[in-house]
Length: 138
Image (cartoon, rainbow, N blue to C red; front, side, top):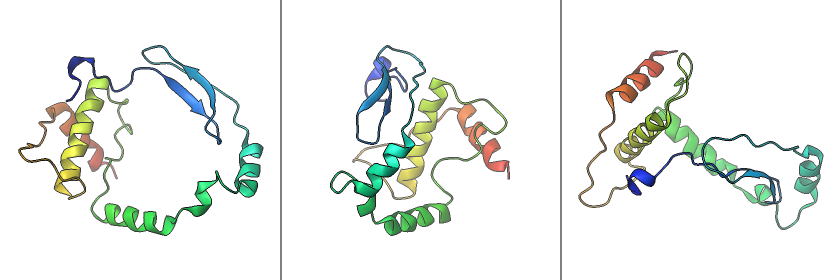
């Protein structure tokens, strides 16, 4: 993967961002961390009904997203479901392997067009087995 050994899936810099894009809480160190903050739900609701220019949700054509979502679900979805139903979350290494699986799947589905000379990623047996096991759960 690009970035070599220095590339990390999760490397800190956790943040909670408010509905106006302001940083409410953050942790700038490395590694896993917990950040917390009080979400002003009433402020968000007020902003949604009064905000004329910064409230882009009102301008979204969600009908288009439904078509994309339905098409993806008809193909079996993208992200494997039930991965943590009977087992703990994947390790950081497992997550990187899962990303490789997802990229391979999206190329196969025609969502991504790979560059010339690209070869599908090899995905660890452990993650492949985990996905098969998760898919077997109804």
